[in-house]
Length: 384
Image 1 (spheres, helix red, strand yellow):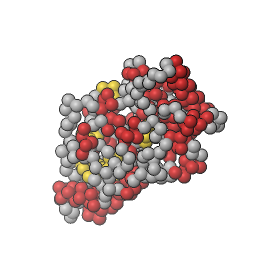
Image 2: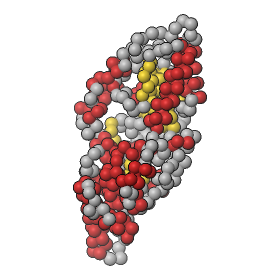
Image 3: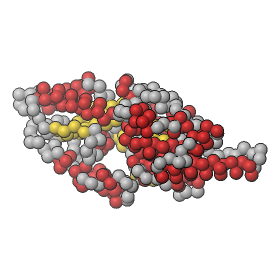
Image 4: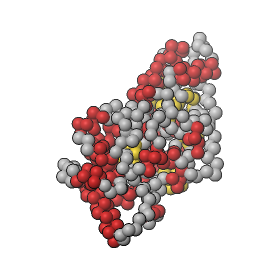
């Protein structure tokens, strides 16, 4: 991609920048900003994060070397980045009520509707075509989680929000429930002012994490994060985290639910992100009964499809082990004790053992109502 300035025959750079942001909103983005591409400080932070081993099994995070933090190395000729935001908060069942009901499955709100990647890429491409219509052919490449990009740092530089203590991007007007996409371009456009941080002394997100994954402000140990454990991790979920996972079967929103800035979040107007198949209030036992064919059919076009049926059952087995003991729960688990997957069988056995242990405790103290949180923190389990 050859770098070049905006041709003299086109509107000036400032006018084009205003047009680009307006076109982005017309195409359905909540907001578009323009970022400078110097990520020197963020590169140092990222390298330190990798050196700490916080990426776990996500080896792709280090696979591309400095290309992730140096846009012009990933796409030669890049001089500016367009950062686009797409809001996803669905009109769904109350998350707190779902989390409080151990018989229900909690799925991260971003995954209740259609997978955003194709929609984001399509709109980014249309924005590029609008720009080309104004300036002629230019060099660009659009991304939607499709290449090594420090998307949150670029979005911050584009003024779309600041990186909070939980490491998610926060906008003071609408919270943090949004997707990001980027376009690297060889057009020199004036960058927007970078967003400034407004977390202040608030640290509500840190104790809200069930597994203690936010080990310090702005430092997330992905190996402890429920989103990592239920989505990225391919093998068995470590036993020390299973009780703390509670009924979260795909991702986790707790740090965002605790963030006071999300009081400004509003349901998305994007129909593609509407809840599918009642997954905002589905019963664990019912989901555990899905055959592989049902799983494929009901998660087609959804982000959930990426984990496959085996990990879906693994996650549900853990949640069922944490659920209140009932005939429904025990029957669901018993039906999978001979599952073809050794990983699923192991998690089912763990879940059944949890219910047996609970039953023994109740028998040992008849008439006593045991006070135990539905989704205990690691601190409650004696973990540090």
